[in-house]
Image (cartoon, rainbow, N blue to C red; front, side, top):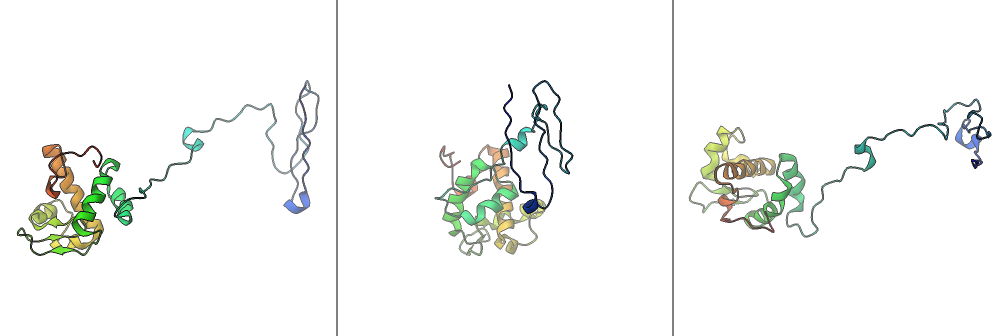
Length: 176
């Protein structure tokens, strides 16, 4: 036997009528009172919910111990792989203390600029790639991260390791 649950609605506070299924015997068809909003009968088949609607999307997070958390979102937007972000964080901190306006004039290859201290020797290649027009563009954090990503990918394609230009000679299993 179907148990019926009575619902009490205060239509005055809701500003209109509320639908409620009519109480009926289990063998009788489900009936509705004439109301303004449709109600799905209890015995109606369930609607399938697409899998992407079942769980809300997970927002990428920044580790609590990140050294340069302010640049993680920009790095992700530009296409840095999640697996490389921990190492990228360490390199940004080591090279510039997370400050985009840092310039190492002492570097013999035209100076190093920006968050990741991109060396002046890369300027021509980065211009050919359409990433920058002049060396000073490397002081812009987005341009610097995009340039570093292009250099990283160049290393990955050529040597299967992208961190060489920043002094890393091996892959650290804990830092990418």
